[in-house]
Image (cartoon, rainbow, N blue to C red; front, side):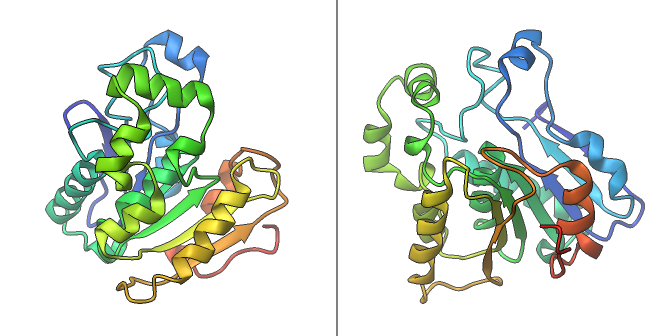
Length: 246
């Protein structure tokens, strides 16, 4: 994945935080400048390597704001999982010390990729659960520019590329993850349904558990501010304590 990531390396790192890409705004897309979501946060984690990924479809398809890791021939989630695993191993970092974080498109990707990296964890804010349930203009752009075909056609062959529950089934592993959302997010009903359906997958091996965190700090399809994410969702990088402010 050349030229599609930025990597802040520490001496003797305690772990790896992977910032998954977010969809571009129209203004950022117009600049043509590569955008590595939240890489500016790297200094907040001085003891951890920080890896920020670019949506791999954007260099080849500048007309779109995001591809949701959809590709007609390649399992992009699998590709990213292998890449991150290789980076972590090369830095002496175990999978148990890898955390994926993203919001919206990136939240979808964080859970999906974590399911392919056994032992890792994910924090996903306001993620899509199924690409087909997202904004019609985004779905149309994926069909026209990325696939040259319908999502329905891809779903018949590769449902895991479009739906998080199908991804977890395909990976054969439930990762430890925290899904952060609010009741006014357009995807809230899909997110709560995802948790109900996930509970039924009792036979799949699990790294840990999934937790749904409903916050009132933001409303609608929005992520928490930087200070809340870095200080509350990542306390000591253990993901086990959260401030009542959520």
